[in-house]
Amino acid sequence: MRYLMTTLPTGDEPEFNEQMAAEMGAFIQELTASGALLATGGLEPGGVLLTSKDGDVTVTDGPFAEAKEAVVGFALIDVRSKEEAIELSKRFWRIVGNGKGIIQQVFGP
Image (cartoon, rainbow, N blue to C red; front, side, top):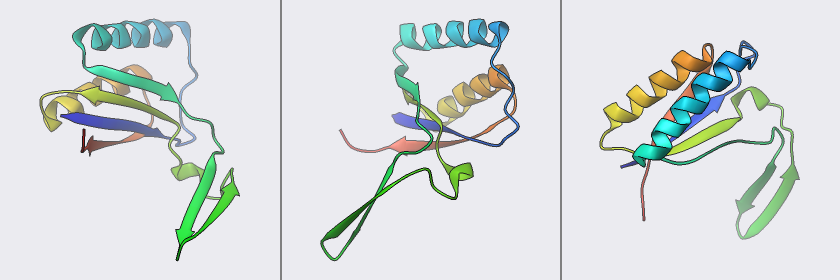
């Protein structure tokens, strides 16, 4: 089962330091070697919003007023269960410290 783990800004994030970089690097290497990690990355803060209504598509450039709810990073994983996805996310947060994230199952091919 594939899950998308996303991180949201809280304003309380710790500064990225050498120890965190080393721990995160080892964690990512472990997940990559096991085949669980399919993709990971950070996202630009602005983005582009597309809104479709009655066949008309409106494009709006960010940043947006509710940036506190914007996704700032992600990891796409392939694991056996929701519980395993939660455990991997807990390991991530133990490395990073403060923060907030969402785990969602990905459906489809």
